[in-house]
Length: 218
Ligand SMILES: C[S@@+](CC[C@H](N)C(=O)[O-])C[C@H]1O[C@@H](n2cnc3c(N)ncnc32)[C@H](O)[C@@H]1O
Image 1: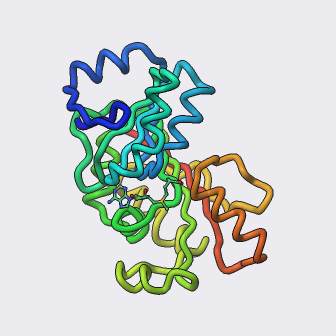
Image 2: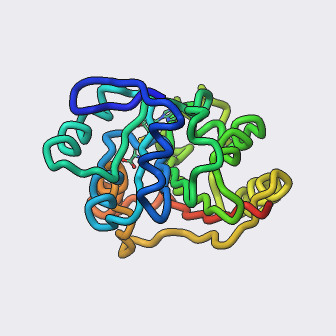
Image 3: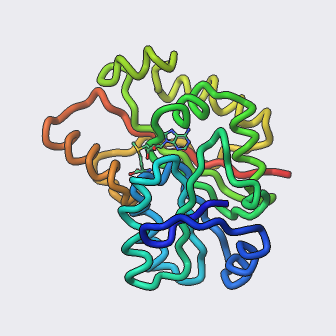
């Protein structure tokens, strides 16, 4: 798989990856990590966990990859990839996968959902592993993207009636499904900060943010 080391990209094979993974008690994958801040911050406060961020944008990944190298953070890896093309080396490695505020075809894949792509995520998960998703798009505020990708309105009704049963049919049990309120700021990513700031500043209620947590049952 192709990972960033500072400003450069290098390729590592499954054996090299395994030698990293073996040093830690758990592995968390952040799919659609963007600038990788989630990986950077969590790796600093949870030294026994290996954090792996994946994003198609090498430019975005470089924002944190330079810091990871400079601060010599060994338990953080940023890799180039997408939901359509996930590194095969990561199969069956994740104790947890997080997808925070997805966009583009990542959002399309998990919100329609596209079974083939959900299965690609499931392949990375160990049995019992968790999948945590935070949806924050608004079909009212993002009309163009909604139309372009043919997205549905995101609501608790849609999540409960369509998404959860489909995820369940693919082998994922729902553990939690809830709406974020303004005071909850536990998920510390660049886009979460932006959305919460704008939502509070303009008192915009059209953008609901939903948190979903699943686990892989076999
Ligand atoms: C709104 S940003 C959120 C970034 C980060 N998770 C955060 O919360 O700050 C959406 C991210 O999804 C990524 N993305 C778009 N299409 C993707 C795909 N097909 N597979 C993986 N990531 C994708 C984008 O590159 C972008 O970094």
